[in-house]
Length: 312
Image 1 (cartoon, rainbow, N blue to C red):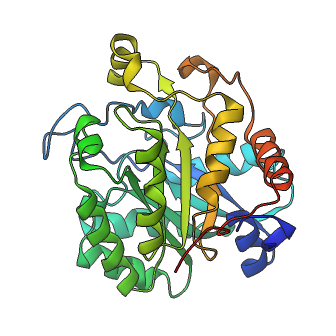
Image 2: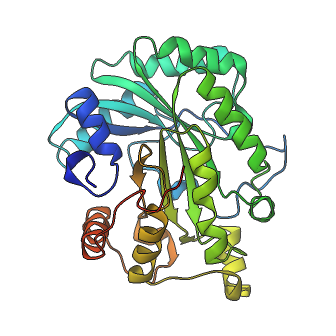
């Protein structure tokens, strides 16, 4: 079976090319939000694996207004992504629905006022959404691209508690189902390799993901980031972490991909971080484009594809 771009999986980049006729590049925007597991609303300290500085491009800092971040982001990306004909303002750092509805409206519309910005991508938590915020995003989606990206990370509540997420998997299911009722495009983010999870625990994600009304999904391998609580946990209890070589991870993900429903778009299957933030990286510093090449090569070698083992 072949998907968009003649690939063996349903590519998110390919979906955007087919739907909108060109590449749309994300520009990270820091709108100065926080998280309820940082400011004490739920708990403090944030997620144990998280150091947001590791995800910040140099142009994206909350001391700059949103339009300046977008201008500098376009300048930053246009050399690498020369085929991009438009941009998506990616509200990524922290929880980008964690504010009043009118504050959110002001920030989102400011980004959308840039002539080259075609839409917004909102990274947030499932416990930071409600009816008024969904209605706002629904209104904006009538004239612009709107994507909500929920950080879920794991389907297992024991893991979510251990990493200090401050929400349950049921919270995620409820948020995703409410979002689907608004007809909004939504994706989710998961991490493979969180402490206490076996390979079987991770493979169990597939069935739950298939049941959710998601349009797209993004996966990352766990990377131990400097300056996090997980850095200390990894040093003290390395036996609690499933660690895979690059070849093992690619084979694991091929096995996982075979279980996913065919109409789910795969945005990413692994991630990269700036070397200065990575405490432990047994793969070496390999770029996403090379990871993608290796995945496609392995799918071809195994003569398999997304959804090969999917059962309705």
